[in-house]
Image (cartoon, rainbow over all chains, first blue to last red; front, side, top):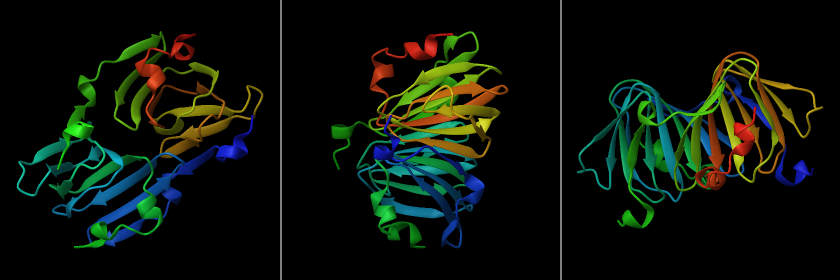
Length: 127
Length: 127
């Protein structure tokens, strides 16, 4: 076995992952693997994430609360995602999000978010 | 926008995903995206998943319960993973798992598990 070639197994405790405050009502914890990124998002009621897209597939599991997705354009009919549900967004799908209530989400991205690692997440930091 | 090239956004309700009984004490629900696989695993206390490896990176989030991982070989010291923790396993890392108590896990794989889609999951179906 040569694990060093690919890094080493490690255990992440979410409580130890730094929480980044992106806007007054949006914060995030992110863990980057080699192929995927896991991110916890905390959205206060009413938080808007403007329409954007990325090459990464995105799977958004709502843990608590309720999200309203718009796919394709701001004018699209909203799609509600609740606890126990997952929004599966193929690569390069334009999407915007609004938190209907205070919401906690686990997002999975594949491949991992190289843009976040490089600091390119301004679309999240806008109000 | 050309979403058809990559498929279409869809919402998965976990309650509608078929649960596969792999052994008397191990069952699974799996959702395959384009780049990642999400899987819920339900392990009864004492369930053993024998040492195996795969090219997919694996991120195992324990939601409820407690898992004991062995990395590299059956003789390795166990690594305990509890609720709120994630075991990050790089690609091609040999690992075996034992459920210390009844355990519910969300596993993320990148890239997606083509072997499962093709039916190649016999290592899970052994006792």
